[in-house]
Image (tube, rainbow, N blue to C red; front, side):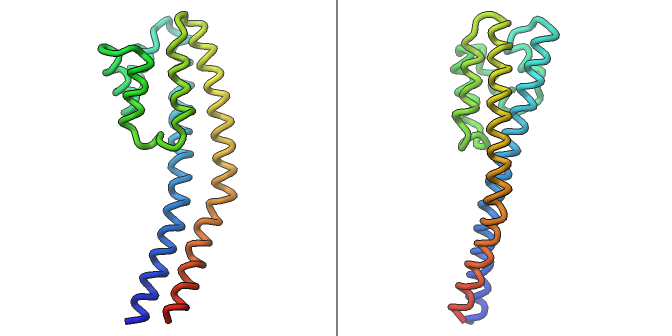
Length: 157
């Protein structure tokens, strides 16, 4: 019975450590996907004279679909906030994603393109910081989970 309990404790701790690392990886993936979408949005707007809503409708992602759907009944900034509220992937980096609403406030297209360029640079900085954090802390969380599990399992036995 003790061996089963020790094994359960070990597996739970190892899972918690792996889960923490997986959260960092998911945050980095969400940032990478959003940065790629913003780059594509910038390219679309630069090459063809369309509004942000029209350019966003060409992006095939759930959050952009919600944004475009909300544009009819709300302002662009409010539509973006509503799209973010329904997306869990952006919860921890909300400030960066809300920065897109600054792009939406600009009235002329050149100002929007400049704001998108600034947002792209900010996203690149955030991605680099998060990648460094994942490199540094990711292995630590996994290792600590396993080591804590082993030590608790030994105490139980």
